[in-house]
Length: 109
Image 1 (spheres, rainbow, N blue to C red):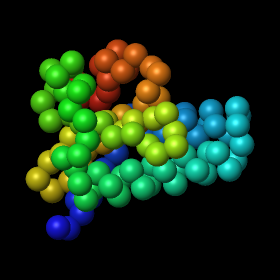
Image 2 (image 1 turned 45 degrees about the vertical axis):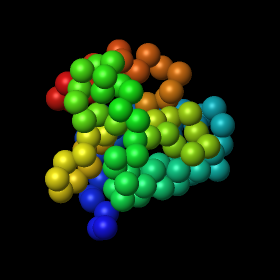
Image 3 (image 1 turned 135 degrees about the vertical axis):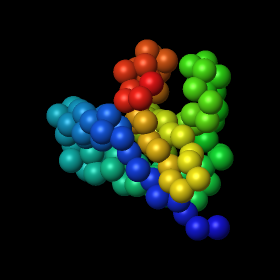
Image 4 (image 1 turned 180 degrees about the vertical axis):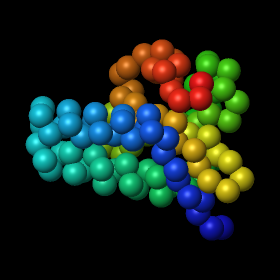
């Protein structure tokens, strides 16, 4: 099976930028680079296996098709919707946040 293109929305890119800035200011460059590496691995995984993400928030938020996949070694989750030709990444959020409230700020929700 061919991997689908993973395309983050502007808000997802802003989420990533904020997380990297936080890791740079509160931890180290090594931690920030590790976050980016974990994110790239997660994008690769969901591109190859999109159905493996949890549909939990799809039910809570009444957003059919929304799935979430955790970053390995980091407390963040990638929220996405699978389309026939690509994966639409809506947000990249820290798991301790009020996910339903933060998802309401997402583009197109």
